[in-house]
Figure 1 (cartoon, rainbow, N blue to C red):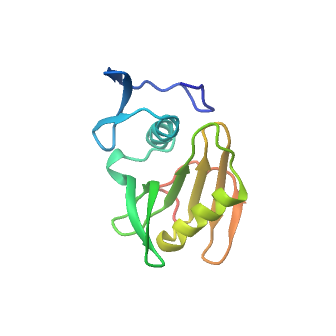
Figure 2: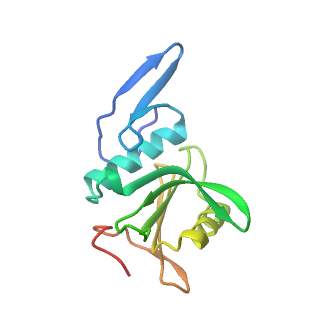
Amino acid sequence: MQELQFPAYSFQIRTEGQKNRIFDVVRKKFIPLTPEEWVRQHVLMHLISALGVAPGKLAVERELQWNRMKKRFDVVVWCHETTPVCLVECKAPDVALTTETVIQAATYNHSLQCPWVWITNGIQHVWLHWNGANTVPAVAPQSLCATRN
């Protein structure tokens, strides 16, 4: 798999038939290893290792309702029982992060209302902060679960 702009993390990867699978520490099962999943697993490890988020505070690939439509987010950090803190939108490394990607994440965040949004393809990382009225570019927070504003 392609090298990403993350620290080196150790993953359990196994081959079943002709396909590689990677162990997801949050879902606690092996997942087909696609380029987007490679990015998602790096994101999870980064949230856990660098930002101090407990695996039990992470939701991965879950459904949400927006405008009567069912959507599926990549990762949400829940530092408090009922309050999501960060929405992460993952793309494969060869997918450019465009205005459409930001709109997609903002649409998902309309339902969740997370103060932090992280959009990444593993090569580029875009952090946004939502203050309740506006979403603006931001520097990555040092900690997510200690941050709630």
